[in-house]
Length: 117
Image (cartoon, rainbow, N blue to C red):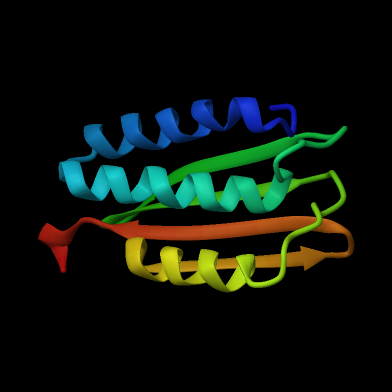
């Protein structure tokens, strides 16, 4: 999808729909929506970019893995925003990472169902 902050809703709704169908609780679905918002925002920022954001959703045993790749340059962030985002993500998902792969931003998150831990 285009690297536009207006389309983050599509990414959140896709994650919520999949998680609901996979038996995640209401709170777990809400956590996923927060995580997807945080990570997509890290990729596109408030203004978006000229490129695309590619998202991959897949079931991994008892969890949902969401990976994203942006072909736009990384957005400029305010000092401390990465630290706050990391704290939020640590609270809502089991695993997460953001990396810069030669100018292409990537993220990965894993959210497991609580009933399976």
